[in-house]
Image (cartoon, rainbow, N blue to C red; front, side, top):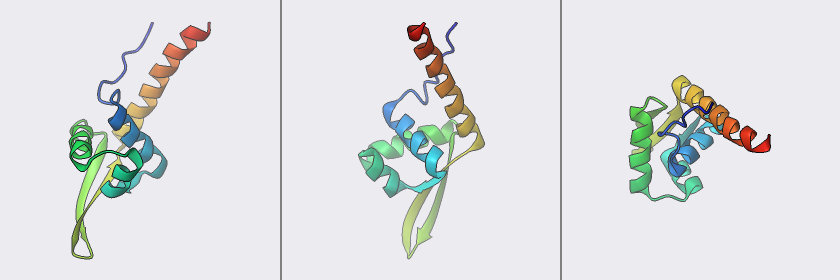
Length: 97
């Protein structure tokens, strides 16, 4: 009756990261850190988990001679997010019936 919720996306910070990337498609690490109000260390760990799952791409480059990290949602990440939302809707719809 219920679809399992994706454990990768069922973390508050990882869900926040994905939600941001759904709307902007690509964002700098510092932007994500500010919007999620997380620490650099915690954000780095969660970004790595999303990358390992194939949900985001991490692009490391230099901007004005300073290292710059960008995160970009992948097609797999977009599909996973949509499936996660659909699964949540199943849970909510049962309560309404």
